[in-house]
Structures are given as C-alpha cells and as structure tokens.
Image 1 (tube, rainbow over the protein chains, first blue to last red):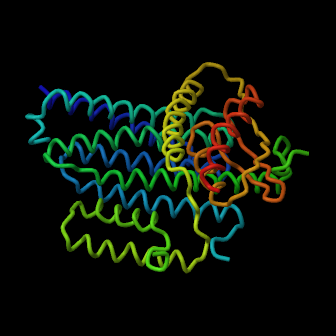
Image 2: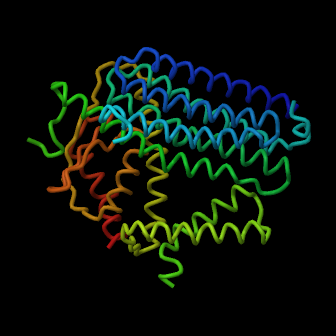
Length: 93
Length: 118
Length: 161
C-alpha cells in the first residue's frame, strides 16, 4: 500500500516536472529575444536535474544523484558563458 | 520498482510524497510563469520558484527517503542544494545585466539609463 | 594561525563538501579533504581579495532565518501572481540609495535579493551607491525601499564591520 502511494505521487511529480520542462523548452524555442532563450535554458536544466532526482527515488539507487550534480555544475558554467556572450558578443576577450 | 520501499512506514512515506508534490508543483508554477509573464524582466523572477523551495522540497524528500531506506544519514543532496543556491543569483544577475545592456544599446524606452535616477 | 588558515570559513566549507560527497568520515578521505581544504584557503589568499571580517554570529543566524522565511513568503506571493487572473502588470524598476559600501556585504545583499522570487538586482552604481532593482509587484515603492534598507542592509552593515 505504501509502495502504491509512493509510486503514484512519484509519477505525478514526474509528470509535473516534465510539463515544466515543456514550458521552458517552449520559451527556448520561441524567444522572442536571445536573453529569453538563455533564461529558458537555465530553468530547463534545473527542471531536468530535479527530474533526475525523482528518478533516483524511484529506482532507490544513488546513481542518478551524480548525474544531477554534473548537470547542476555544467548548467551554471553554460549559462554564465551565454550571459557573457550576450553582454559582449564574444566569450573570451 | 522500489524493492525495499514496501516496508517503509506511513510516517515517512506521507512526508516524502507531500514534499515531492509541493516541490514539483512549485517548479511547474515557476516554469508556467516563464511562459505566461509578458516581459523579459518579469520572466526573470519566475525560475527562482523552482530553484528555491521547489528544489529544496525535492532534495528534502530525497534525503528523507534514502536516510530511512538505507538506515543511515544520507545528506549528500545538500551539496547540490548549496551549489544551486549559490549559483542561481549569479547567473540571473549576469543575464539581467546583459539584457539591460542590450536594451540600452538599442535605445529602448522604459528602461532606466543608469542605476542613478535622473 | 592566519598563515596556515587564511580563510577558516572557506576551508571548513570545502572540507564539509568533501566529506558530504564522499559520504564517509573514515580517516583516509578525511585527511585528503583536509589537504584540499588547506590548499583551497591558500589559493584564495593568493588572490588577495581581502578577508571579510564577520562580527555578530547571532545576527548572521537571525538574518539567515529571516531570509529563509522571506523566500518562502515571496514564493507564495509570486505563485499567486503567476496563477492570478489580473493581466495588468505592475512589474517595474526601482532606484534604491544604499549606504552599504563593503564589496563582500554588497555581494551577499545581491545574492539575497536575487534569490528571493520577485526581486532581481540589476545594476549597481559604485560611485554614489545607487542600486537598480527590478520587482514583480511594484505597488508601493516606499515600502520596498524600506524593506531592503531595514531588513537586509542594516543587519549586513553590523555583520560586516
């Protein structure tokens, strides 16, 4: 019984996070401007990271945790680089 | 699917479920705001819902679940939490600065020309 | 003491993160973590950013609690704005005069304001101390200015002396 409740709420949480990822993807595709796309990408990787954590709870292993950590680390670097690019038009000066 | 979870007590499962739903709900509202709000500067505020309490609730759920499942303290999720909390303001500020710089270059109205009021 | 541990808080943070990621308190990983933490402190000292002098640990705790509470409150406020029916947007820019000058304290203030949903630090004028803030519900400018100055700026000025 506990397992049923847990797996149903996990499913619901994953559906909501998936919908959140769709919303942010729409923002990345539609723009209208470059900064909107960057903000959308930033939100997209956070949602993806949270989705991985829920997969980790579902499988009961900590393998997904490491993937989530890598996404968090790389997402920050990529957004910072993109913001720098928007500011000056080049990443390395 | 979750082999050992069948033996988990209700008192753990219910908070885990509630935290999961609250966290993913907040993240969804934030993402929906990214879709719905009508100007760039208003949209900057939306993702912070997901990166503050949305993330916090899901991390707490994960910590609680694994701590009880493995009967030891599992708190390495705190590393993700600390990292995201420290980096989100930095990226948002960078993007907001880049956006206002671009808007000023294009000579948009309704954008303040400097931090000092004129 | 200062030669060996130029940044005690940063070194402690690195050691804690190392132990968290290794998920153990065994002496081997702990020793490696200690070495990494010491090296991290020395590297930061080479950058020579100046050490922040933190006073009043009680105020640090109170400010942290306040920020956690405020973030929760503004999460709900922003969620209701997003889901609300009213289309008329009240978002807008706000100029705030700051007395705070310490760069590290300003960095903390910027992180607090941006991490809170509903307000974003956009620009800072270092010469005269003007802050350009963007807020999502700009109903009452005065109360926003008072909130930033009383709730965050004053404790930060006492903490970073």
